[in-house]
Amino acid sequence: MRLSQLRVLLAVADHGGFTAAAERMGVSQPAVSRAVASLERELGARLVVRGRDGVRLTEPGRRAVAHAREAVRHFDLVRTEVAAATGEVTGELRLASLPTATGTLLAPRIAEFTDRHPRVRVRLLEGFDRDVRAWLERGAVEAGVVTLPAPGLDVVELGSDEMVALLPAHHALADAPAVPVSALAKEPFILSTGGCRPLVRHAARQAGVELDIAFEAAELSAIATMVSSGLGVSIAPTLGRGAWQDTEGAVVARPPHPRLHRTLALAFSPAGWRRGASPRRRGRSGAWYGTTRNRDRPGRPRSEDDHPAVPDERLQWNVALPPPTAPPLPFGRRA
View (tube, rainbow, N blue to C red):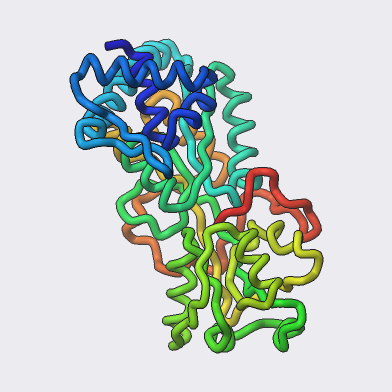
C-alpha cells in the first residue's frame, strides 16, 4: 500500500468521481482507476461503487477513507512539524469557501498569506454551506467560510453583509424604500437551499408569518432568473449581487423590513485538531489563523456556541466591498 494510492482514494471520495479526482490531481482518469483498483485488491474489499450520479463509498470504503485521511495527515505533519521547529511554514493548506465570499473575502487573505509563506500551497474548494461544514467535520479542509451561527466550531468572524428582497421589476413594491417581510409572505417565495435558508426562516418567524414556498433553488443565478420571470420573490445576500445584475434590470433589490444581515466566519476543522492541538498553534493553519485574525481585528476568536441567532446590524465588512456596479465575481454565485 502506497501513500499515493491513499491520496487518490481521498480525491475520489472528496470530489465524487474518478474524472473529477483526476482533474484535481493532474493525472489521467485511467491512472486514478488503476490506483483505486490496486488498493481494493490489496485490501480485499470493494471501496467505491460507480453510479449514475458519480461514485459512492461502500462501508469498507468509508472506513478506509477515514484511516487514509489520518495517515495522509500524519505523513504531511512530519514535514510541517520539522519545518515549524525551524521557523518555516511549508506544505499544503486546504481551504473551503462559499462562492459569494471567495472573491471578496477570501482572495485578499490568500494573497497576503502566500506572500508571507511562499512555500505553502493553498488548495481551495467551493461549495454550499452544508458542503463546507461536511468538509470541516471530516478533515478534508483545515478551515472554511461558514454562515453563523455555527455551533461547536472555533471561528474567526469575517463580517456581515445585508440581505435584500428580490422582486420582479414590475412588482408593486419594486419602488418601495423597504419591503416588509410580511408582504413577502403573501407572494410565492423562492427559498435558497444554502446557508441563508435558516436566516430567512428566522426572519419570517420574527415577523409572525409563514412563507409561501413555491420553489427552492441552490444557485443564486437560478433564483434571480425565476424572480425575473415573475415566478416569485426571494431574499438573498448582497455578496451575490452579480446574479441579479445579470438580469439587466428585470430584478430589483430592496432592503427588507426589519433589516436582515448574514454574518460569515472562518471556521477551523475540529477533525484536524482532535489530537489536542489548537489551530492557532499548528504550522500552516496557525499561520493562516494569524493572517485572518490580524487582518480583521485584535479580538480573540471564540466558540460559536454563544453567537446570537441574528447577527448584530452594527457589524461591517473588514474588507472593501465592490460597488453596486461591479461585475459579477468569477467564482460562481451560490448562496
